[in-house]
Image (cartoon, rainbow, N blue to C red):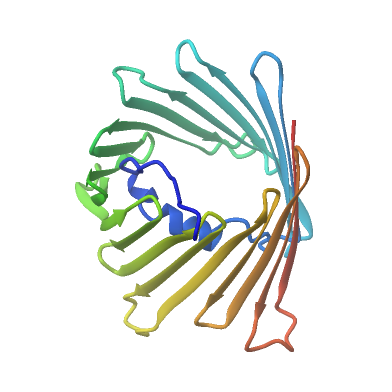
Length: 293
C-alpha cells in the first residue's frame, strides 16, 4: 500500500506563484546554466547573515559575484538586505512585516551604480488575508506601477495583473490566471503580455519521493503557431540526494543530480543536450557547490 501524503493545505499564493509548484520542478536545480556556481552562507551570533556567491560566464570567461548582508530585527519586523555585485552595483532592500496592520507588508528596493550614477527604486506593498493576496509595486523614477490580486476559495484561485504608466495615462501590460491548488497536485491557465502569451501548467506529487511538472506555452507572434511543451520529474533517492530530468518538444533534454555531501555542503551537477543534434558541441555542463554554516 502506498504511503499516504500528508501536506498542509495551501494558502492563497501571490500572482507570480500560482504555478510555483510546477515551475520549481521545471526550472530549479538543473545546474547547467553556468559551468561553475559557488555559494557560501553563514550567520553571526547576533543574527546577521552573510552570503557570497559566484557564477562563471562561459561567454566572457569571467566570474560574476555578489556579496550580500542581511539583518532581521524580529522585534520590529524590519529586515535590511545589502548586496554588492562585482559589476559595481549596490542593491538595497528594506522589508517591513506587519508594518501598519496584520497581513500588510512593505518593501523598498533600490539599485545604484557608483560608476555611472544610474539608479532605480521601487516601493511595494503586499496584503495577505485568508482568501486574498494582493501586491502593488510603484517605480519611483519612471512613474509607473504594477498591481495584482489573487482570490482563492477551497483550492480555486483566480487573479489579474496590470502595469500602468502614470505619465502616459495608459495600461502597459495586463494578464490573468485561473487555477486549482491542492496539497498533492495543481493546475493553472494564464495569459500575459496583453493576451499575447498563453500558458498552462500542471503539477503532481505522485508519492513522497516523486514530483512531476509540465507546461505548455503559446506566444502569439504572428510568425509561428508552435507551442512549447516541456515536462520534468524530480525523484528523491534518499534523504540527502535527488535526481531530475526534463525534456521539451524541441529535443532539449536536461539531467541533474544533487547530493548533500555533509551537513552544510551540497554538490550539484547538471547536463543539457539537444538529443536531435548530439554531434554538435552546443551541450552545457555545470557544477554547483553550496556551503552554509
